[in-house]
Length: 252
Image (cartoon, rainbow, N blue to C red):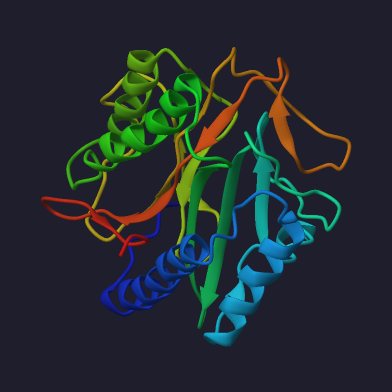
């Protein structure tokens, strides 16, 4: 069942999302995603920032997940577990996915980063494709559209850029719990699924691969990576469905 949020809930979710947007800004300002920095250092920074601002890491302990953020590198798509031994190297394509529980209201967002000054064209294309796909999909998140209108817009961008959708993964409802109905695929025809209503809160998150897009779960039981070892990119925001236009909540 899809829960349409009331005004009080939306205000609480919005505050959580504003804090998450500020966190990603701080990550960039501190130049944390840099050569030689360990994934654990980034995770500890994220947890400390969230707790200092009165929140709780929404990912920590969720279904047993052991960290505050998912930090996935190169062929890894999502759910990479941070460790002190793993350090960023020049040429890495890094995905940071995290969320905040602020007074019971949940936000969720992800960004992709390249370690180095000038990414190769194929990396640049992959990173650009997920960001463009997010905005194209988000523009369909208005009352009266169907859920798969979002999915189709994302899929069209993947095909335009010549990259693959990772079909096993997708977006979801969010706000009062980390994962709520509905599941939001990143592919498919338009005009299907439930009708969108103002007050629905969704995490829209294109995840693309430079190769075939087939994935597997690593031995740690969490990290999802591509079977062919191809690079992946991820871009996610929490959004609010509006009557006439979408509101992107996890951007400043």
